[in-house]
Image (cartoon, rainbow, N blue to C red; front, side, top):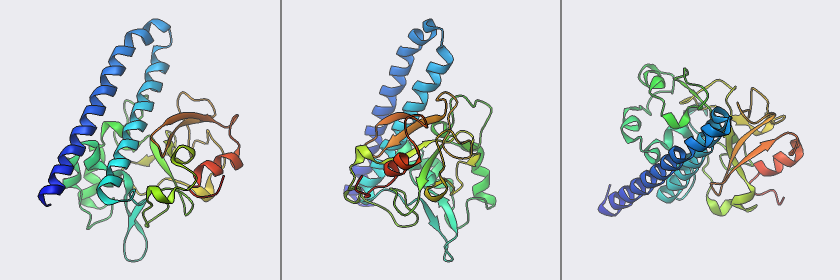
Length: 241
């Protein structure tokens, strides 16, 4: 890595750490208020979930700053079989550089070396309501040719012609049972509705989930507000809708 690259890497890490500290401080400041409300647990889960998604969004953008594109949804082998997830690719931008260095990109996600890393899942991928779970991700991307994370080909911001504030990238998937390093997400062609346990679902959003948009904003979305047609319009990056 050249000097300019090292300086950019250092700057990116500092920015991410500052944002993380701010979000943690805000959460700590809010906790007394949440506890007095009588709904402290649900409120804690909501605040933490939003913060996790925002940090994932910032990591995606920091990756874009470094490479000129968002990460691919997955890295495939020579036969097109998915080997590595975008969740692994953005580890350096989640202040998880040491964990990233332990990951072996020459073997699949579930080969001997990499499978040992499952229990080292970064806290940011943990659902705040799932204290005992140490390997599963609570967040998944929407994946498919029309999406921001379309497959093995990376997408740049300039390709999001519908606008970053109108394009959804990822959301809660607390019931999908996806190991955090596994190159598996919610498929665009298989999406049916919000609140689907096998797709996008939440512990606190009834019939829906918190969702991350390409501009790093986070919104609560439910099937009552967004039917399948409207949701698919949010999933596409250049659908003209």
